[in-house]
Length: 79
Image (cartoon, rainbow, N blue to C red; front, side, top):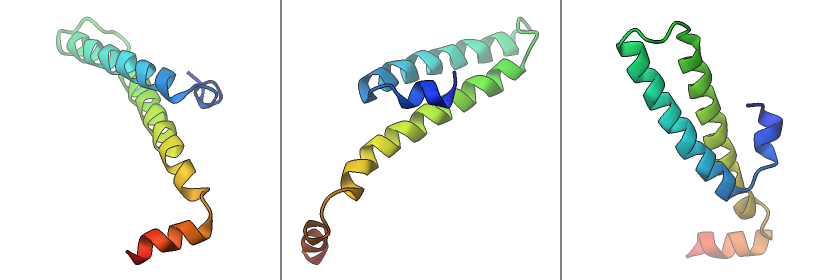
């Protein structure tokens, strides 16, 4: 899954996708352990997709904090 595609999804959609990808990774690891998976590179691809999703979720969480007015940010840091 491309980063561009993930970027346009909402936080809820990303959470669902994250659960699906983690389940997929777990299944891939079981297949590797039992020698059923021929292309072990798919494990690496799945891990990278999970990392991209987590990155975007963190960006969406941090963005509102960074975009708030400076005087409110200073008032909270003074407390």
